[in-house]
Length: 358
Image (cartoon, rainbow, N blue to C red):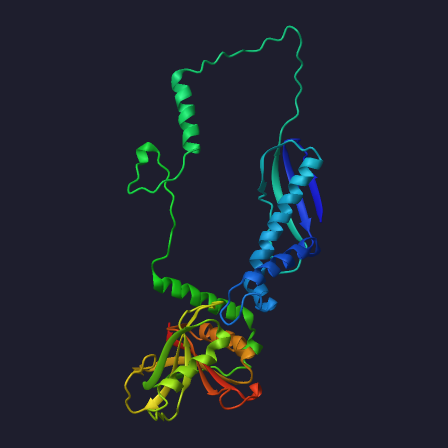
C-alpha cells in the first residue's frame, strides 16, 4: 500500500491511500473461514457450506468491512508516526471517485484532514493570565452525585416506566410476526441459492412447475434427533398399520415434509407421509388425512443424498428468477429409496418447494 499526505497551506491536508488486493486478502479469507464455521444455510450443515457459496453471499460485505478497517488502521498509524496534529477525524474528500470493490485492486481513497496550525507563544515574567476561582456549591455537588448514582444503578423488573425520573429502560425485542420470520428465512434461501449457482450450474437441473393433486395419506408427525435418522420414522407406520393391509395409491408417494423452515442441528420437526387408497382408522401415531393439492417447483435427481443441497439451491434460484415465491414447507418424495436399493447411485429423489406466483 502507499500513503501520500499533502499539506500545502499547513492547515488543510489531503491524504491519498492506495491499497493493493494483497494487502488485506489474507484477512478477508480468514473472516470468510470463520463465517463458514457458523453459517446456517438451508440444505447444508454448519461448517459444511461450500466456500464458493460463502464468498458469493458474504464476500462483498466482508471485503468492504475488512478494507475499511485496514485503511482506518493505516491512516491512524501514519498520522501517529508522522506526528501530524490532526483536528477531529479524517473525512472523505470531495475529490474521491467511486470505488468498485467488486473489481480487483488497487483501490484509492482520499481524505480531508484538518491540521492544527503552528503558532508560538512567548511567556516571560511580565505575562499575566486570568485565574478563575470556581466554587462547587451544593447544587453542583448534588448534580454530580445524581449522575454517578445513575451510572452505578442496577436494573430491576418493573411494571411501569417513569421518564421524568430519568429511568433507563432495558428489554428484549422479539419478532412476533411468524409470517415475517418465515419470509426472511425464505429470502435468505433464495438469495444464497442465486449466489450459489451460476446459470450454467442451474441448467444442469430440470426444474419444473407442477401441481400435486389432493391425496389421502398415512401421516406421522414427529421430531427426529437429526436429519440422518429420517429413515427410522418409517418403522412406526409399518408397525402400527401392518395388519390393516393398506392399499398404495397410484402413483404412491412416500415423502417427508420438513416443517422447521431452516436447518437445525438437532430436534428436526418432520411429517412423513405415504399416499394410500381407501379409508382407515387412526392409530396411536399414524393419522390418516387428505392432503390438499399443492403447486410446487420440482426437481427430480438420481444419485446419493449428498447432492440434495445443490438441488435445493438450484430450485431456489429458479424460483427467484421466474417470478415465484415460496408458499409453504418443502418436502422430498422418495421414488427410489434405500428400501428399494442399497446402491446410492440408484436413488431417485424429487425435491418439491410449494410456490405461488408473485
